[in-house]
Length: 232
Image (cartoon, rainbow, N blue to C red; front, side, top):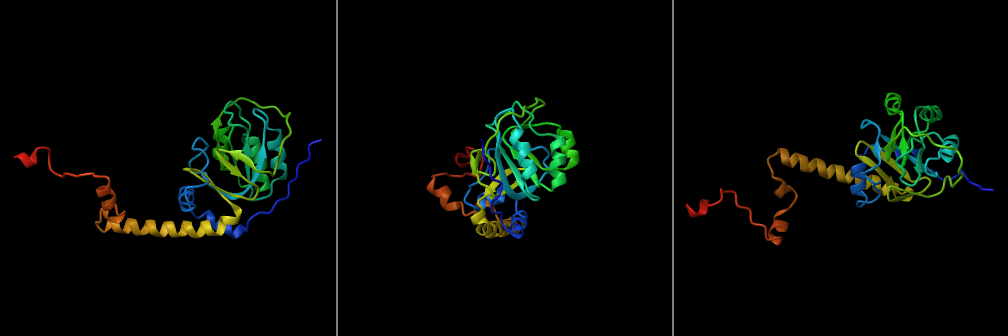
């Protein structure tokens, strides 16, 4: 007999909402370039965006039994995170299951296997981030862990960690670091706004980013004239 548990602590919804104001790229940089899933996991539609606590589940390749069970037990606002061994040749999720998720208030799905019915998923507007698109069907045979840590896209995702996905990719934030990452993301965006203002005021990238010492240390000599001008 295989026994699974579904209860775990979830982060404050207000903090999740606050994190969702920042892009996945900003969050990744702000938390020390950590947490980014492999770039092979992409949104079905670039307009798709999601932010919510992870409900992890592990599936066998070409088998979506545990995914369906996870959908039945995930709570509104959760992001179902599926680890299935980076198996591209399976469409383990499509419009029917997306409707089941949407009816429950599940926020989105992130998977390292394939999905299908992508036109319908885009029309439905349910956020899906997947490793591949495949029309190949799956079986319902293998039981496995649910609401336990899983490895996906090179990152360990724990129940209740926060998943942020957008057009550029997916990043994971540790639940206990959520407040600090929000602060760091806000600070990064404020700094970037200052950079943009400086560029528009006429400053160069070298000035704004303080690259002069780096250029000097690397021994790079920049000549602005045409080659041979000094000899004329």
